[in-house]
Length: 215
Image (cartoon, rainbow, N blue to C red; front, side):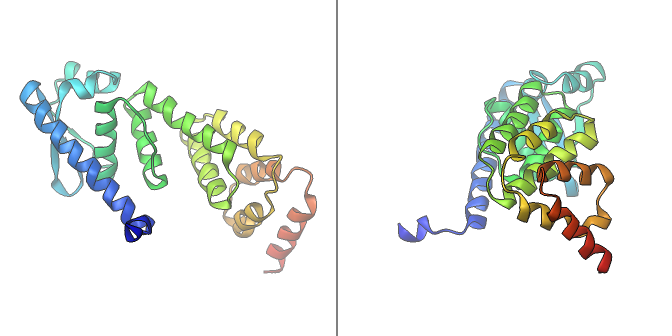
């Protein structure tokens, strides 16, 4: 039992993915017997058979592709197979559980592209909930990168504004200094947003800029 408790996070992640895939296969087998199926093409030539109902019940985009354009197969090879399987499993369960960081962006992107409103709102709600408890730099990096992606991809400022509001009162010196260490590669708006996180700590930014100019 002690060995199981101390399993590395990476191995636990693999176990979780295996469980998700197993559940997906079972659901798919049941759905295939009950409904019209659509072939989902994945990367490297793999494919899945998914019930039409599962795809169309919450997605206007899937309904348009399947019901209006009469597509019998859909390519989703822009995303990793693991993320697609997770997305389809969530559509079946209609419940958004805890999502690993490495899966979040692809899942959120699919929710937006295929217009699954409740899943999009759930993903962004998950980000905002995590902002409240974010103390570690790795959490702040994840949140900033995802909020920046939302801002630049869909011109949506709400999540970034929420992040700034939640983190501005914290001590963000180590996060800011690490993020600004590659200042020459950052966009102007990224720098402006990071400056807001620093609040009145101008000495930190002056120090970073001086170091960059000397390097």
